[in-house]
Image (cartoon, rainbow, N blue to C red):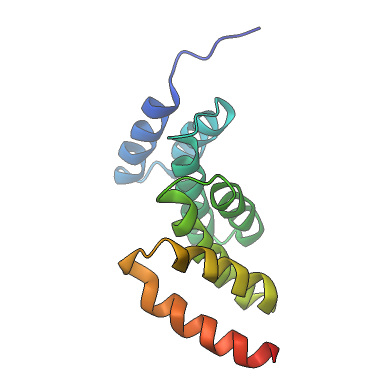
Length: 130
């Protein structure tokens, strides 16, 4: 086996630096490393960050997969944040039920940054589903 010479934490830190210097493809690689060498504290953050980069790049299916990985992780901050962004994608794709579940996951952690938008979306989607 080949040992990778970088920790998941270092890979995420490197990705942040690469993004600042507009080296997005290299940031993808660093984040992929952080996800391959799974670490419960850092890899969900990498998955969420990868989702944001992919979404900004227009690769919505890949972003959805990355957000889903982070949302399922149970990480205290990365999971609800990813669930919020995943919900927005699911809603845009017409998956009201999936979006509602993801918005509820995001709202359950009470992160102020998107709680009002998640609450409004839950009310709207709940009305559509009933």
